[in-house]
Image 1 (tube, rainbow, N blue to C red):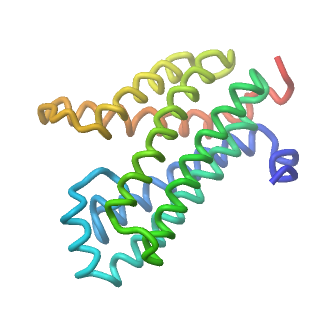
Image 2 (cartoon, one colour):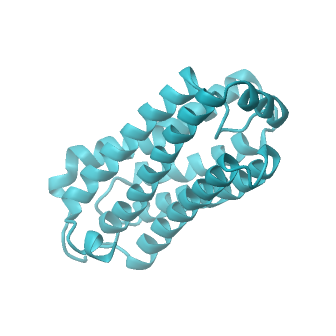
Length: 210
């Protein structure tokens, strides 16, 4: 892992973040829409338990899909450290660690669910812990981006705002449909816009500490 980070240039890391995130969105959409909706996103746990029992094969494919997404999340976490360490190594490390904690928490939860060490109710608790790490990650990422000096501050602000929309989404405040749409769009656009910007501007990012 250390060699992976050491040998990765900031331009390649930026490209890796963008490609990994866009790929993860594609896989999540495929799994949610065609295999097993509401598996890693909040849902009715009792209904989920019945769906898993009735659709074991689809459940298996969904698990593989989400494990792949979580591996991509871990790669994003490592690559973000390379992208952000030029500005502030401490913030870059915290951003990376929080993303890795999120990914590994859900990976462990999924594997335990598959081998039936835990049930869907226990998994829901583990998933919630993972989302705490993820929400903190998004906020710290936004702060790091805002203070980087070479990534637009507007993207940092959008990410920090998105972290609060994640809180509203995960806790489920029973907001109106229009607010639900706004929250979903904010969540989706924050990381997507950062990913697109990193891909487009990767060769203009500084390789040395500012």
